[in-house]
Length: 418
Figure (spheres, rainbow, N blue to C red):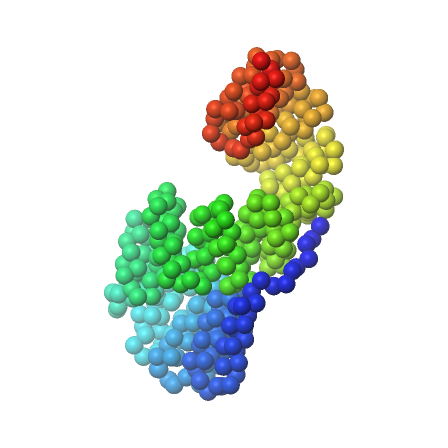
């Protein structure tokens, strides 16, 4: 079931845009007004409108002026954010052709190459930029990103730290924080992400990255919500927000976020699966099944989509179809114990404990520290009247650390077997 879109959550942000738009319209010869509106539109994800206003500003800006330089940069950034390499390269060339802006042109070109992850070309351009201007901020940030793509984290960190010394350091600190998190330096990474958000409180990327790093928490939901407010066209943020809201039991809000995610990226399997998960949480198994099948039509071996199909069949009581789909989901992704655990659960529920035991046994073999796997194995063993083995399984479930279980319920099962 597709959830209807609620009232857009970015009313405050749209009000800001309306104010900037009014100012730009009232001052058609003021390039600064066009620049302010264009930058705000880019950050909100409205790239076509942003380019239109930035182009107007560039047309009235004095030649070789600072405002024209900033307009040229903003046009290039917009094309880069829109992942339009050819037009980004053209915008960078216009920037570099301005008097005294050769270093900026090379830095811009480096950032453009990163659209297609062309790290070698990007590093060549940053070298040219830094040769002419060793403290060029944009070149250092692009250099760090290129080193990341080249799997050279030490060099990337050095570039980001060099850039972070600049007054306009929010982007550099954001990239540094994300890099440190990927290196399992969580405390340092979180500190830098928080610093990036503090430096740019309305920056959607920073809000999103910090929200993802803190998930799943109430603070994370708040950050992701702010990210969608600042950039309503941010499918990844909508998706993450919806997933967290669903996990927190806020089904209606999750459905709204899922609908926005699908609207922004109709081909996103994760977004389609999220709509199915919401439907399942609402008790609409047929709608959930339809969403799962729609996702598998896009990518047949997507484990999350197949797992949704399996769960939908299970909710409908179609045990054979559910088990078949659970087996397929496990085959597509051996990192997730859910298909094995849920297959064991549904088989035990219809007294097919030999099959339930097989799935549970496989689950504990593959994931020995996953408590739910030991619970379903214990259930199957109890169903087969193997009391001693069931007790051992339940005790194991209570002793391992991974996964969430109802400890009181497991303890009650254990006590019943004494």
